[in-house]
Image (tube, rainbow, N blue to C red; front, side, top):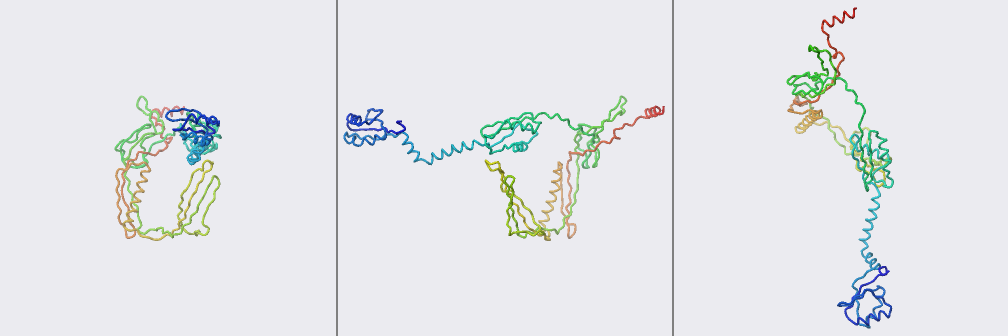
Length: 415
């Protein structure tokens, strides 16, 4: 009650202390923790301090307040510093509210299944970032994921603060692999064989041989010989291995000097597409239209694609611009002609790199063919490490019998 009402600690340096204390006792003014050192120290109620004015005048004792304590003084301090305390209170409230939501979902342990696949499964279960933690059922998540994917043998869903950790363990796949069909490995490009590595089958070429496109590099037939080194049987297998071929390819492409060029008319039609959840609507200027017969480029950009937290709604804003243009005859300048030849030459090299070919040497030249056309010619040397497959025919597995054995077979058939 003393702290609730508020009290002050006072100090009096001069005057008649004994008379002052007796008068305070006579007027029922309570004092506590009275001690005298170089001065008189005591504590008393804040409301009784006002009553000391006439008593101090009589005894020449002037008590000065050294310290104010208690609830009333604390409230006064809080009101004076209300911005700090209100900000601190707002921080605590925000921390409590924000910690009641799930802000991140992490996946670990998966090999076959991607994080996107598991995230779609979580969306199907209505589990997403921004949901209330009290609506989270980890047992139901574990059971549902195992039902969605029988290949997953173990699932653990653990709630760690505002983080949902989903750990999975995939079981072994006991499904039998499809039996590989017997085949040969054939050359994809013609050239000179650099090296041959056979993992399965029989090598049909050796380093230094020249092959054409479609020639067999590694045969899918393995001969089985008897004691006399005669072929008794031919086993068909799926040939496996690597044959490196150094090939050369020439190219020639005509570039017309006059071409069609796009010229923008300056007319642009912009359309906004807004999607919130499953609802979609478009915005466009009704007074600005393009002719249906006009040509235009369509430029599409996504301005916003994110979820609106804490609601389970995704917002997507897409901007689509229709830029009108016309075709106009134009003629390449010398610099533009070089750039066009360089662009076509790089397109050829890109196609080779996309086919996993290692380019060794390359050369190209741009020369004038006639008054209206130029010619881009060149040669590319590269290494090819991949081969095509060709099925093994049934007649290739048959073994030709020797003459005596064939005659005995025929006599046995006649008998």
